[in-house]
Image (tube, rainbow, N blue to C red; front, side, top):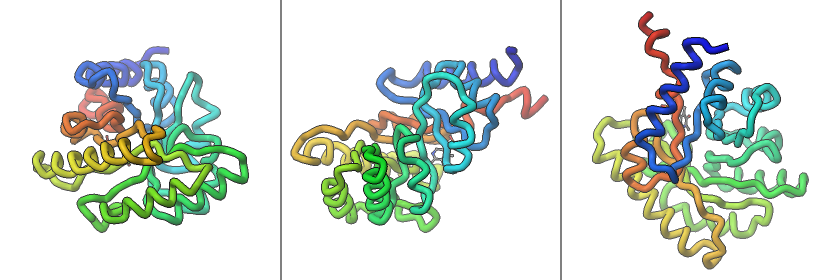
Length: 229
Ligand SMILES: *Cc1c(COP(=O)(O)O)cnc(C)c1O
């Protein structure tokens, strides 16, 4: 049944896509939204869904119909990694050497290879997880030793500022790191393909800096009529 929410979600997605280059993957972040809203995004043509809690993602998965690629984007505890293996298209939020080792161990147990992104906290904000730039080489070296970990790219959350040039600076720095590893990681055997950056408030800046994967929640699920009506 078509209701207001469904049509609002479809319209918001269409508005976002209009200004998004074709080669940028839109991940709809459904973390605060129920099954009906999540399904509405899929019905509007979104194939990539992002969740930030393991339990919420696993609960939703069997209930959503359609060809969906599930993305885990939230803070991840090592003891929860095992629940993601085999159930996720991509883990965006690998932010420590310990997590890389845990993904390797749990994936090996299930004879799986898990695609991951390394999350960076380039502005070094205390409230965010993520590697610092000078930890990159060590993280890459560890990934290269882990046959059940497929490093697929990099991710960051934009800095907590409204200043566009400060935001652009961080995104540009991650893009440069991405280009470097794309050219050099494993001597060019190329699994590196995703640069995940940009959310509702900053995705146009992220795309201008070279992002090819944006994670958008509020701009999709915000329903003007519901908010004001
Ligand atoms: C919530 C969240 C998003 C989406 O944020 P919006 O501002 O709602 O677009 C993207 N990425 C991560 C890691 C998030 O936690």
